[in-house]
Length: 252
Image 1 (tube, rainbow, N blue to C red):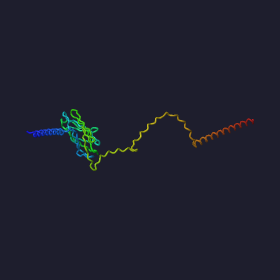
Image 2 (tube, rainbow, N blue to C red; image 1 turned 90 degrees about the vertical axis):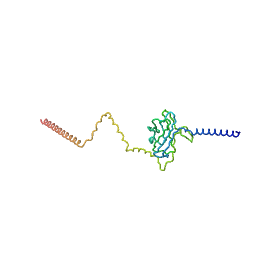
Image 3 (tube, rainbow, N blue to C red; image 1 turned 30 degrees about the vertical axis):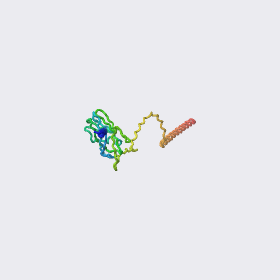
Image 4 (tube, one colour; image 1 turned 90 degrees about the horizontal axis):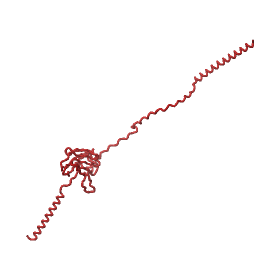
């Protein structure tokens, strides 16, 4: 074996080791991806109606299975606008003040949780974020609640659904009109005033004499005439008697 042959073998050995290292590095990079939560839609357009959203939460625990998922709904989707379409056996959906919870018996360890809901109508947005909390049978909680901004990567990204522009003619739901204000005629009647308590009776003043009628004047004047006539007769009689007596005395 000459020297040139030995040099070529060493060179080939080095190339082989380098290729093997590259394959190992590539294998590590292409290994199983980190667990995550995601969402897809049957009609990912703004203002789309009766849309089916499918959620997938990958299992990341080696000791317990997923037992419950709590989701915070994005603005524009109310909890009462969501209904359960498909879920693992015996799992139920319950509305919460800011979204919903879905769960039941814990899944087998290493089993991903997948379920579908129907949304009455999607809001007029460019994207929707569904922050999710995964609870395992042993109490462990995984929080997929971080929202990437400016293209930056985050460790626990929340499920994000990108929406296309709304279809031509699509309209948001009509908000209920406010109740008409009551008019003056419809206003309830005012309550009756409380009865006035009678005060202590004050002494009544004597009634002023009213004007006399013509009959009363005539009766009084007639009575005075009769009395005056009788008095005149008595005086005349008394005078006559006095005159008569005096004449008799002078004759004797």
